[in-house]
Length: 210
Image (cartoon, rainbow, N blue to C red; front, top):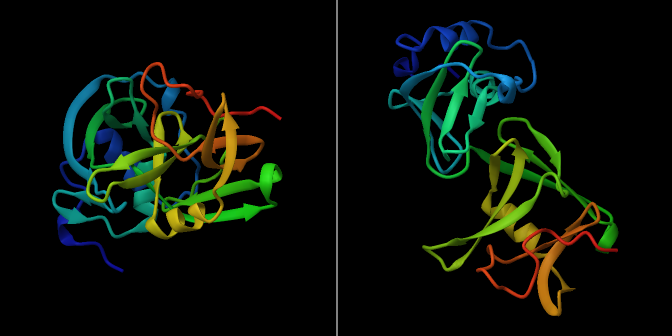
C-alpha cells in the first residue's frame, strides 16, 4: 500500500529523516532512555486512540515506518511523548496510549497462568510485575480500559476484543481483606480496578504473594 502523499518526510528534523532513510533494517527498540539530546520542538505527528499514526494530517501507511518511529519513542517524566535520536528530541501528540494491544496469548490457568501481549508495532511482552496490567475508567461507557506497560513509561491499550477475552479470565482473590476481581499472570495478581484513592484498604502494587 502506498503512503498518502502528505506523509512525505520532508520538513522532518534531520535526525528523524536519517532514521527514515534506514527504514526496514529490522532493528529492535533503540536505547532512547540513555540518550539526552536537546529538545527541538514539536512536530505535526499524532498517534490516534485507535493506534494509527499520522504525519502532517495523513495516515502513515507503511508498517515498517510506524515500527521505526515506535522504536525511538519515549515518554518522559513530564508526561509528554517524544521521538528521540542521539542528536534531537521532538515532541509528538498521543491521544491515549502510544501502542495498541492486538493479540493476547494465554498459557495455563489459575495462579500458574501466563499472559503474553502482542502490540500493533510488533512488541511482545509477558504480563508480569515488570509489565503491569492496570485499568482506568472509560468515561463514555462507565467501564474499564486495560493497559499494559510495554517498556520505559510506554503503555499499550488493549483492543476491545482483548478486554472481553481478559474478562473471561477474571477470578476472585483476597487482597488485604478485600475480595477483588482480577486476573493472574506470571505469579502476579492484577486487580480489575482503577488506581485506589489514598487510604484504600487494598495494595496499590500488584499482589505477588503465593
